[in-house]
Image 1 (spheres, rainbow, N blue to C red):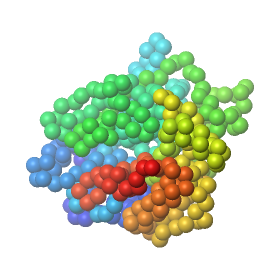
Image 2: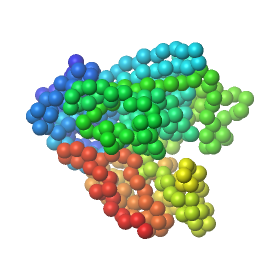
Image 3: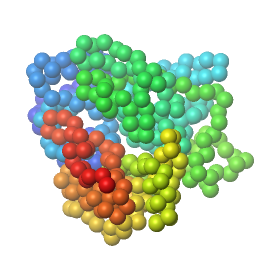
Image 4: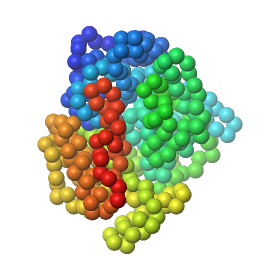
Amino acid sequence: MCKKKDLSNQSLKDLNTFAIDVTAKKIIFVKSIKSLINISKICQLSNIPYIILGEGSNILFLENYRGIVIINRIKGIKITEKKHTWLLYVFSGEKWHDLVKLTLNLGIFGLENLALIPGCIGSAAIQNIGAYGLEFKDVCEYVDVLSLKNNTTKRINKKSCKFSYRNSIFKNQYNHDYAIIGVGIKLSKKWHPIIFSSLESYIKPINITACNIFNIICKIREKKIPDPKKTGNAGSFFKNPIIKKEKAQKLQYLYKIPYYPEKNGLVKISGAWLIENYKFNNIKIGDASIHKKQKLIIINKKNATPKDIIKLAKIIHICVFKKFGVLLEPEIDFIGRIGKVKSSDIFKCQKK
C-alpha cells in the first residue's frame, strides 16, 4: 500500500528537519516492502532518479530534486523473549525515539542513552547513531537490506556492517541500489547503566534507573539541541574529529583542548570546542547561523537557503582548519538535483 499525490514539484519543506524550502518531482509514502519494490522498479524502468528518506533528519537538500522522494513508513516491531536477552526486530520506518520509549515502558532496558535522537531505524543503522557512551553498533545484531535491482533480501551481521564513528557500510557499498528494511537488536536482561562523564553530575548513584537516565538525557538534549519543529536543523553538522595522538597533545599544549582516547592510537577531540574557541562572534549568512548552545549545529532561523548554509559551513570549515590545523568533516548527507553529492566535492580544504 502506498499513498501518493498527483501534483508535480511538491514541497519538501516539512519532510526535512532543516526545513529547506525545496521541491521534488513527486513525493510518495510507502507502507510496505511490496510498495517500495513497485515504486523503485517504476523509477528504474522510467530512468527517474529516486531517493528513500525516513524523517529527513540528517540531510541537506542543495537544490530542487528532479526525481521522486520515497518516504519510508514501513513499520512494525517484533519482540522475542529469551532466557537472558530480549531480541527485537524493528522495521526501518519506525521512529527511533518511539522505539526507545516503547522498550522502557515494557521494562526492556539498554536503549535509554540514545533517547531523543531524531530519525528512523534505517538511518540509525546507516549513521551508527550514538550519544552518551552508547552507539547503535553496541545493540545491533544484524541489518536486513533489500536489493532494489533483483528484489532479494540479505541479512548482514553486525561485524560485516563495518560500523565506525557515524559511519557504516550502508553509506558506501549498500547505498542507492539497496534499502534497509529492518534491523535486529539484542538487549541483555541483566541491565548495566552506562554513565557517561557528562551525566555524572546529574545522576545520584543510589537512584540509577534506566528511566531516570532516559529522563535526564531528554532534558539535556531539549536544553542544548534545538527542536527541528521550531528551528530548522539536522543535528550536528560536523563530526567530532578523530586525529593522531601526537597532534592532539600538541593542541592540548597550545590551547588546552580536551581529548578522548580512541582505538589504534587515535583520539577524538571536540568539534564544538574548536568552533567555540575560534570565536566567530555570532556570524550568520542569511538566516543560517551557528547554534548558541551547541556549536556543531547550524540552524535555519527561518528562511535560510541551501547556499546560505553551505557558505556558513565552508567558513567554519576553513577558519577552524587555518587556526587549529584540523579538518571538520560533515556528518550530514548532501542531496543535489539527482542524488547524493560527496562532501569532498563541497569542502575542498587541503590537509597540511
